[in-house]
Length: 225
Ligand code: NI
Ligand code: MN
Image 1 (spheres, rainbow, N blue to C red):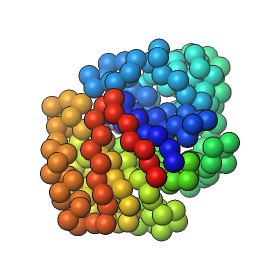
Image 2: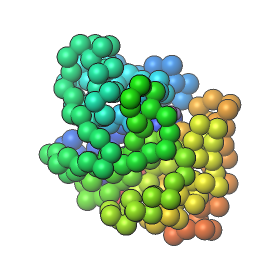
Image 3: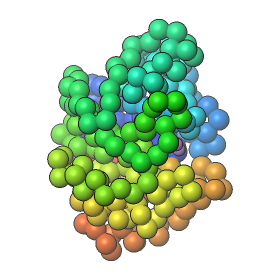
Image 4: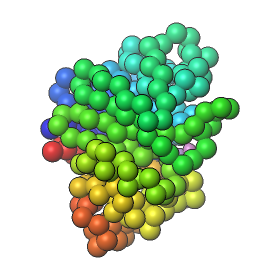
């Protein structure tokens, strides 16, 4: 079992009771942020790409907490330019790393990277007996079928905001192609341009896939089993 806490936009925390894994900590300047960057506790930070609404406060939090940042090398360089030396672990698409809580695999994402020579990515995180797929920012892509085949996805965190990423229909198809058991929509309602009806997404996805959709509001938690 692992406790999922949503901090708004694409930022969330996975806590297995011993280790805390934070993702895309855009808190400063995030209108929906449910916690301040100065207050968040974590041991690892996953960063999907260098856009400000994902890289966010990652470097500052890593510096303060000593947490290890997992990202592509180009993103780690930005972190070090911002705050100096941090604990960083460079990865790239398709690579996995074993960590004390489980395993993290860096997956494809179809999105711009925010840094020259970089790529955007997603992650599959094995923690607390569940496999969590964090899609990052992405368009729908057919290889999502392979992600779900390699690691059966217990929970998929999918962007539904449209404009910058998948919208409702594509994110519903993503749930189906991933064969995800559960889905949590993210990356919506932060600004008017990505306003979405999460209830409609839930209806659409549950009609067209096997997934149960959990609408988790910023500041709320969910026990993942
Ligand atoms: Ni982006
Ligand atoms: Mn984004």
